[in-house]
Length: 507
Ligand SMILES: *Cc1c(COP(=O)(O)O)cnc(C)c1O
Image (cartoon, rainbow, N blue to C red; front, side, top):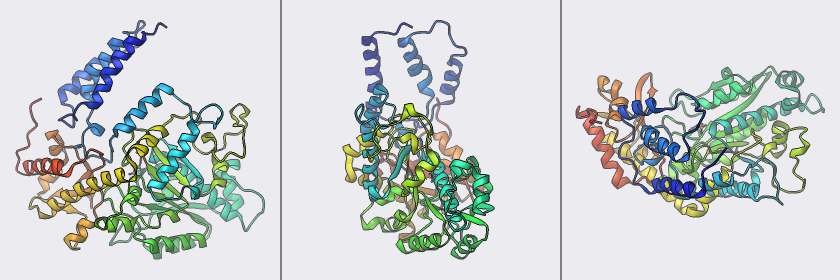
């Protein structure tokens, strides 16, 4: 195959790099016409003779890119928890592509890639006030879903070991003999996952791992479904013949509320779980970053993040609040000995990594993939560039915008903030993290609310169900967030939509 010369590559990559410096797109969604146009221009069959580099890049930029949504590139994209991409992360990601390191085996005499990955994840631990040495099993993943799979896989191995301990001295490993045999040997007939308002990916992980989606049991309080009903939890843990994994939702996607509040609650959970050989897994995909905060204005978030370090394992996302490109999440576990029982890549002498005494492990033996992207480099780059203060400031701006929107809802005659609460305004706002859930008071408007807001293409929100009725959700996670600039835009859109001045702009 004949590849184009370097001058051509330089010319085109400079044009693409310039995009990074362009102001954010005005519209958060492409017009219907752009979508149709792009779809009609998609190449329908593989060409025998390719169109060449210059023409293919033109095709991507001119035909396809106008039909991409603005997600990470616009501060006004508030759907899901998408994050953005900091400049330091974006530049590093280009290097990742150019150097294309395969971070699977630790080869200290050949590349520093595994050292960078290990350092990046320990810097991340420091950012989150977690002592790196207490999390010896740590690895970047493709996202929080895969980190949850890692968490439940480690938990499954651990609870089997615990249940087997008083029956047999022989090693009993799911990784080795499979779940049916391991459970039989351990004398248990059920592995249950006890949680409150879990993210959907937890059930997905349970399904993939042979525990079953039905093993996920929500034990929320009737007056506060995000919090554990401790009496029910104790009863479930006591159940004979069952081994348990307790999954803590550290900020839940619909409301941003945390399952625990303060060190004492986490200590109580820890004590209970130790009594019954249960594993504690924290899903803190975006909530974990609350640990960056320090000011008293955020005391209730700071308190909700206390004690999460008492967990056995933690899931976090880097492509959300850390603002690095997709795909990047991370997994932390205290149990180094479990890691290889679950993830070892056995009998592949050609992938061996020389030195057993080196503290850096080969990622292929402690995570899902063998070949892996160097996704650690953007994390390293952005943490080095902005430091703790940079991230604290970024998150404060996001929370302040969320609280500004929540305050608007509380004062509005058209909208209501969810969940409904009788607490004081100060307490309600103090509990807001980066998610704002709300609905229109008028039922007819409420049914169309998400679509009407999206149709303005000025801001993007996502829809959900709350108490069986449609509801709408802001998730604020972009590094560009600026309260003074963004709040008036949001208020104007909400006002226009409520007053019916919301017809889609001509495209
Ligand atoms: C987003 C999210 C996930 C899933 O994360 P992906 O990175 O999309 O795989 C899991 N748990 C929580 C709490 C989340 O917010």
